[in-house]
Image: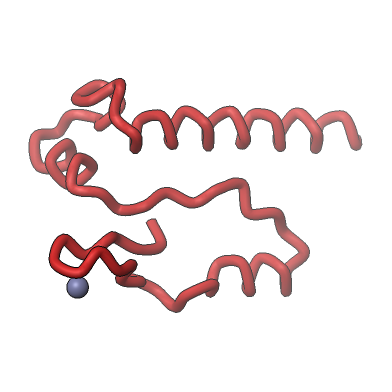
Length: 83
Ligand SMILES: [Zn+2]
């Protein structure tokens, strides 16, 4: 959750330092498996105690979660093969 898109001006608003995750990962020799925008649907799901992928499975953010999950599994598979 690196940023959200402002509803007023449509500019990204970074919650943490911009590119901070990538910079720290590079310093530590780690791979960033993906980023997810903090979107209103995530907040609504958290407030209701329902995962956004259940609340809105066809939403863009749910599809992003799905893609990131595949990336995590793929990365874990690569790491397991290296051993
Ligand atoms: Zn704004």
